[in-house]
Amino acid sequence: HPHPVLASSTSPALRFEILARCSTTKARVSKLHLPHFTADTPMFMPVGTQGTMKGLTTDQLRMLDCHVILGNTYHLGHRPGPEILEAAGGLHRFMDWDRGMLTDSGGFQMVSLLKLAEITEDGVEFESPHDGSRMLLTPEKSIELQNSIGADIMMQLDDVVSSLTTGPRVEEAMHRSIRWLDRCQRAHRYPDRQNLFPIIQGGLNPDLRRTCLDAMIARNAPGYAIGGLSGGEEKDQFWRVVTQCTDHLPEAKPRYCMGVGYAEDLVVCSALGVDMYDCVFPTRTARFGHALTRDGGLTLKFSKHGRDYRPIDDACSCYTCQNFTRAYLAALGTKETVGCHLLSIHNIAFQMRLMRDIRESIMDDSFPAFVRSFMHRYFIGAG
Ligand code: GUN
Ligand code: ZN
Image (cartoon, rainbow, N blue to C red; front, side, top):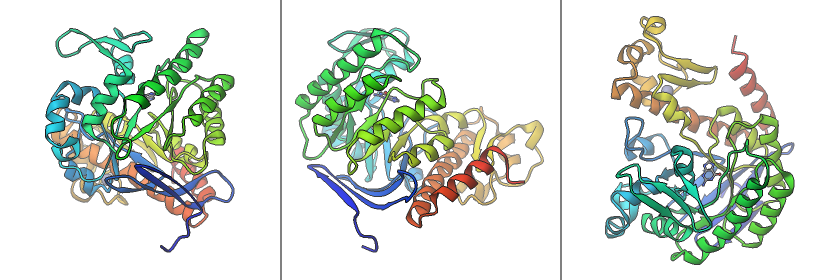
């Protein structure tokens, strides 16, 4: 080991080792040893399968040097379902992925995707998008599904309200998330091979966040997530909540900021001490012909790029930039499946490289200079 371990934590199914810290921010570089893989953090975790043209194959995700991917609990729980998944030896073997995997609990997707979801103390009730029948996702059911998927990290079922919600509903959702965490921990069948992360809730209210932090830290989990953000709140409110959470969470355990994926947020939250991120943004935006670059976004249009024979980014080593021009991608357009795949590959490569740059700059203690030059170029431009 060229780097001494500065701090570490060991749980039955995870070991977290901090290898470097920035001297002026809370940023750190760590090794996250999971049952299937050792991941470098801070890291971005792309969505593994979306069942649509935005999705990438496992081979492509390996080539992009992804260490951990997200599986979709609700989608897989419905089809193929828990019996087939378990008989297949879990999702790792089913989809031929030998690295890290994380599954969300499924409730958040239902509430955010379907306006028809209804939350009771029992769980999240919603109309199945497949056949219209009423379905009840309880903490126990979510863990049963996630146990059969077999991801390295599972998320608790939480009661999520929009970050713009105010009043007693925010407090109710926070307390209910604590009760649902207890039910999830009791239902968990494989604590020695799967990690269950709590999700800190409490909206934008520091007192509610503090209560939730204290209660969930007392449950002694292998790692913690920060939830209920990226819902249209002001950036300074977002940063305040992340700061409060990383100030109070145990230093030597991994911290996961859910649903965060804009480049500027990855940079700032890493400075605030966050280790893990996920977001559909890079692949979703690819569907609209949008490419991520260090000079900001680039929307490929035939009218503008039809004769532009440069790659999206001449410094990018991804398959797309090595082989195709902006003109070709603009000609394919967004209705063509191949065009979306090629843009998704580039956008995931962009996120992966950003995270690698963050890690390398923390390692050689030049992270503050990296933040300044990244922000300048991203928002103001290279020229
Ligand atoms: N994805 C983004 N935010 C959240 C959250 O607060 N809870 C869950 N379960 N998933 C999320
Ligand atoms: Zn590229």
